[in-house]
Length: 452
Image (cartoon, rainbow, N blue to C red):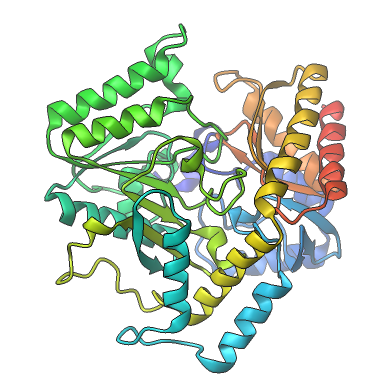
């Protein structure tokens, strides 16, 4: 089945907002001028078309702080950012670190190491929880996921995995195999063998009962699968479902951790979009009382400029000296590592973890107040300065369409965000945002809701 054969409803619960809908076309006709449309046509002419991306929404000409600037000069508060902009766009310290590194060592061949890479590995190991202290770097989150899967195979002598339906772990074939997004798997042909899946924690009540014990039963089901399979290398999951802002109740991940230990499987946490402070702690897993065997990081690690990712693993998993887990050309990029080190410095020196907690609590209070006034909102969720506003219910007939209308009304008023799961407004601002900018964004959201 080609993308052109899929209906909007087929794709409406995808990883992000649909780029082939009537709402988007109407927005572009109302909002974009002829010059912008000409550049969008040119973009589509030269790039392979793909859902969620090409054709694109608009043309950006600038990015600074909390804002994207489009070709028509409009400044748009970016609460999307593909989860890379923890320290905002173009933070002066990150830019300065990149420029300085470019002047001395712009590239490092893989048979060499460099001080920036060593410093970054040390910093990540020091920041990571528990006994996670051995690092590999990669140029993308999907590549880091692949390295984690390979390490789990080598370390356990097994190849099977257990992961969640609806989860997203990247767009490479190995990441798609363990992922659960139909949009990325459908029509791709044979995927990795041995990739078992279970329902996601966010849907536990649907499959395991409405009596408040659904997550216990899901954890028991995971334990059962690990027992009867007997040869699962790793359970891999997002500790918090990122695109729908769902953190399982306390106790869930410790139960899964215990099951992994009991049955000889590793636990891999994918924090590619969520790491580095957005939730008020450096890593989400710190809020789950659970330390994985391998922690996968990415996106914001490069300061919103450089593509950077990493895995941080237990020291005793350093068992493949004769193999190649990654060995990517840009694995120890000195420029990328300089950007990452500056990013970590900014988070610490500007106390952005505290900012995430304080501003997140303020935003959550405002959103809950909105939920009391607008029955359009079924639930508000949040962790630190990452927030989700569920429009209607997942199984409600018109929930996705309402959420999409809300998105384009906000875009026209100067606020960009992502739709997760089709009907969840995900608000992901930079941690450097001011309270005034945050309130401006929430004002835009509320005005758009009142218009619906």
